[in-house]
Amino acid sequence: MRNLGSPRLMVDKKPIEFFKLSSMHLRIESSISTTPLFRNKAFLNQKYAIEGLTARQIAVLIGSSHSTINNALVRFEILRTARVSGREVYGTKSQGGNRGFAHSGAKW
Image (tube, rainbow, N blue to C red; front, side, top):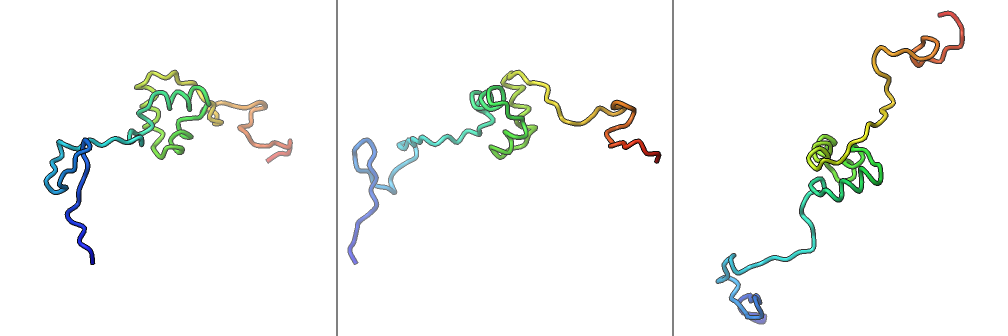
């Protein structure tokens, strides 16, 4: 078995003993973003205002809750649009007095 010696690390093109290195000499550079996407105003604006996704759809896309997305939209002052939920407001009546039931005209 060959002896490889102690591990070495290059900092500023100078070899440094790995175990004698303090953290103040290290600088980590990465192109990977570790910031959550709900903290990115450009991302939220693109998805919500331009693409028309709902807060729930964005939340599923990035793996967070819809309330977090709604809070971020408020924080970034992104204009929120009223969305049609498909539910009728309590107490409203449809045409003919029925509330969404298919009425064939037969007496109940």
